[in-house]
Image (tube, rainbow, N blue to C red; front, side, top):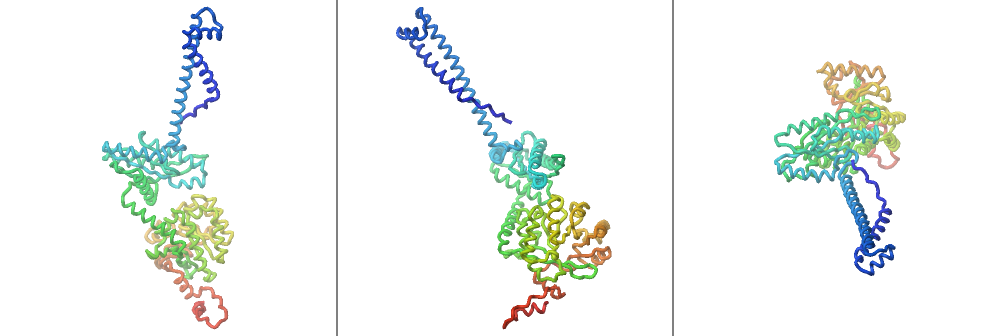
Amino acid sequence: MMVEPKPRNRSEDAKRDVIAGGIVVAAILLFVGTGGTVMQAVVRTLVGLGGGPDKVLSAALILNIALILFGWRRYEDLNREIRERTEAEHRARYLADTDPLTGFLNRRALLSKGQQMIAAAAVDKRNVALFLLDLDHFKTVNDIHGHAAGDRVLQVAAERISAVLPPNATKARLGGDEFVAMMTYEPSARANIDALAAGLVSELEATVAHDAQQIRIGASLGIAMANDASMTMETMVRQADIAMYHCKDEGRNRHIWFEHGMEMAVQVRNQIETGIRDGMPRGEFIPHFEPQVDIASGRLLGFEMLMRWESPEYGLIPPERFIPVAEESGLIGELSLQVIREAMEIAKGWDPSIVLAVNISPQQLKDPWFSQKLTKLLVETGFPAHQLEVEITESSLFENLPLVRSIVTSLKNQGVSLSLDDFGTGYSSLSHLRALPFDRIKIDRSFIAAMRGSADAQAIVVAIVRLGESLAMPITAEGVEDEATAIELTRLGCSKGQGWYYGRAASADDTARLLAERGLLRAPLLPPVGPDTSEDEPLRKTA
C-alpha cells in the first residue's frame, strides 16, 4: 500500500525562491563588476569595505559561496518535486488499476495485462488458462448478514485465492463477487490446471468467520483456454463466464472447462429470457390446474396452479424450461403475480369448497413487500382468501427465516392457508414447522415414486405422515401415478393426493368442464331481462 506524501508548504517555498533569486542577481552583478573601478566603488559604498580590491574580491567570493549554497538547495527542491510527482503518478496508476477492497487488478487493468500475457505465451508455445470464479449465494450473504459481512467474505476469498494460486498468477476482481485468475502452462500440463481449480473450489467451501457468525459460501468456476495469439481477452472472459454459468446449472461448487456447445445453450437461454419479456405483456403465460383429491374418498378438494407458456412460435412450453430463466433474470416476481391474478379470476367461478393452491418462488420470498402484493391481488380480484393456499418450498426457509416468518404470518392473518412444499428434500428442520404457521405438509414426489420399491423411501413417508398427525398438519402426497400407490397412501393415513392417477394439469376450460360435471361451479349471475339470452343458456345448464 502506498503512503500518502506530506503536502508541501508552497508559500514558504515561494518566499525562499524570492530571496534566492535576489541573492543570485546580486552575486552575478558583483562577480561581473569586480574588475571595474566603478563597480568597485559601488561595492565599497554598499558593503562599507575599504582597503582595496582584495576586500572587494573577498566580498564577491562570499556572495558566490552563498549563491552555490542556495543553488544547491534549489537543486534539492527540484529533485524532491520530481520524486513527489513520480510517486503521485505511481499512486494514480495503482488506484486506476487496482480493486481497493482486495488489492487485485480491476477489469480494465486485467484486459490490458491479460492480452500481453496471451501474446507472450504464444511466442513461448505455451497455453493460457483463465479462471472466472463466482461465489455461490453471495447476494444472500449481503441480504442476511449485511454489506460489512459481504466485504469480509470478498477479502477472505481473495486471500484464499492468493494462497492457492502460484505467485506469478495474474489475479483480478471483475466486480461484485466475480474473480479472475490467469496463468500460463505447458499444453501437456492441463491436469495441473484442473488440480488448481479443484483446490480453489475446495478452499472456498470453508466457512468465513464474521462477528461470531460462520458464513458458508462456495464457488462455481469456469475455465477458458488460449493457445494462440488470436484469442482476445473479451472472448476469453466471455467463454469462462459461459462455463461458470453452466457450472451453476450442474449444481454449483465445482469447475468446468468451456466447450463450444455451451455457447449454444447460452443463446437458447437468452432467447427464452427475451421471449419472457415480450410474452408477459401479450398474455402468453397462462395457468393450468392439477387436481388435488381426498385419497380415501376420491372427492375433489382443489387444484394446484401450474404455469404454462403458450408461445406463438414454439407452442405450449412447460415450466421447467422457462421458470429457472425467469428466476435468474429477476422476472419471476412480476410473471408469477400476473399468472396468479389470472388464476384468481378463473377460480372465482369455482365452488367455495374448492381450494386454489399456488407455488411461490424462493426469489419472491426475498421481497419484503410480497405479502402486501398478494393481498392486493385478493382485494382487486375479489377472490376469497380462505380459498387460497400458498405453497412454500423448504429451501426458501434456509436463506432468510425472519423475513419468511414475517411474510407468512402476514398472509396467515389475511386468512390464507400455508403449505410446506417438497418436504424432505431441503433443509428439513422441526424448528421451521414450529416457528412458522403452516397448515399442511406436502411430501415430495421423489419419495412417493420410490415408495413401492424402497423400504427406506416408505419409511420416510410413514415418518412424515406420523409427524403431520402429531402436529395436526394434514399431509398431501405429490406424484401419485397409480392405484396401488393411492391404496398404500390411504393405508398409511395420508389424506390428500395429486398426480397423474387423478388427472394431469389442464387448461381453464377443461377444468371448468370437470367442475361442471361434478356440480362444483358457482351459479352464474342471471343476466338482465331482455329479448335474447341464448348465449347464457349453457352457463345455466352447467350450474
